[in-house]
Image (cartoon, rainbow, N blue to C red; front, side, top):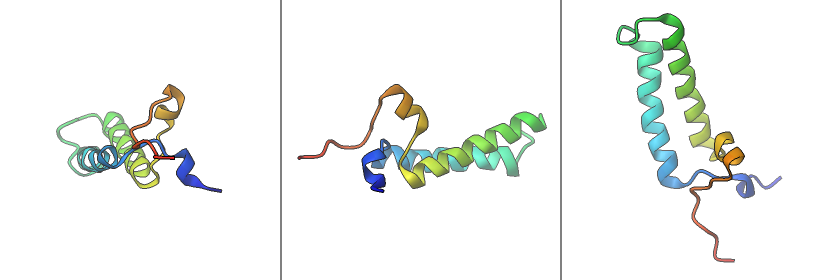
Length: 76
């Protein structure tokens, strides 16, 4: 299976997701004092993990549903 044809998150998008995900994971799991509520902090951390997975794979389920792609157009 060629995973490249399913990718819809481009390079800049993926880098930004890693940065944002790092912050979300930090405040969701490491420094939870800013958020206060355990459930909300856990959900923020999980959102960070999801963004890391999107950055690694390059496939965003929300982009797929919305028909969005931040990948550069191929020249074929």
